[in-house]
Image (cartoon, rainbow, N blue to C red; front, side):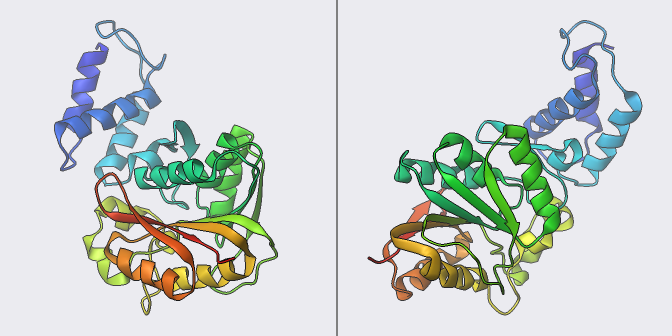
Length: 277
């Protein structure tokens, strides 16, 4: 069996309700996991692990995200380790990171990423801006283990520690940039999520408390007002359905230069605000 024949077989074996192009992209990722060597000329007989291939096809057909199946997701041009303890990095978060890098320039900064998950945000900031001092926190120890693994892989210097944004105090001072992609999906929106998200990605990182979809933004504002130096900026990713409400929250808290930014799909997805002073 040559590569083309094997590729067509895998595409046909995928039962997901996706387009053929999407199935083809998944098939290429899966074949990279089972072929030896990883890629061979199209018409040359290939060597591959049949048992492993069947196992990972079965997982994908159960709607498990392919990134969890292969243990890897790409972010800002780099592969990051991911598992069921962290959200899969999204293109919208890449846009947030790009916005921070563009706005903040290259001067030394002290940065805190609140709710780091896989660590894709702080690792990218630390690599793209080596002069920045980066702190990153998460309530989940399992998430921090993933983030540390990614930082070690890329040799990114980051200070990781556990912190509950909902309850704890935080021993950081005079920060110049704060960034967060907190849980922001309202519980009543759970039914609108794709099965692969709802069934496999961590609820702890997805859902805001049932009583208040903006709970974590209110808690973040509490910390920002204490820890961000005058003139420093906070950047957040947010629920596209609650963009105006999130903007109003920051304006009413006294922040200056509050700016909503659309993602590439034209949806309210990011916000930047400046600490007064």
